[in-house]
Image 1 (cartoon, helix red, strand yellow):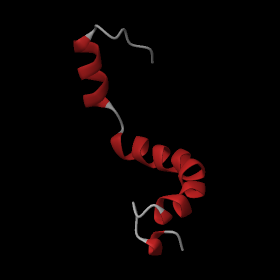
Image 2 (spheres, rainbow, N blue to C red):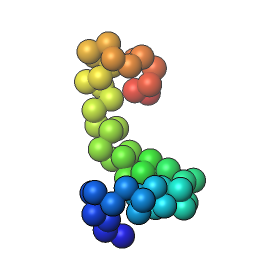
Image 3 (cartoon, rainbow, N blue to C red):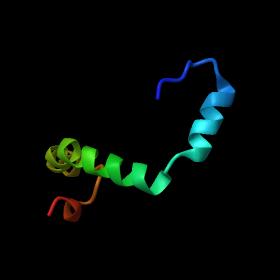
Image 4 (tube, rainbow, N blue to C red):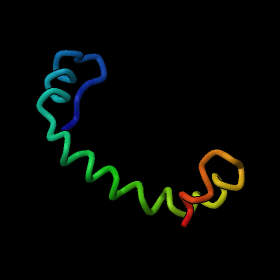
Length: 54
């Protein structure tokens, strides 16, 4: 779905009718390969607990 940035009503409708649990699961699945390699660096910087890396 492609929506024009200025069409507020279309964006509201799309957000309200979205399959939120399905989108959340898809987002988590796609984010894992991107986030996991960064965990040691984030822990070393003190941004997340070291236990989150294990």
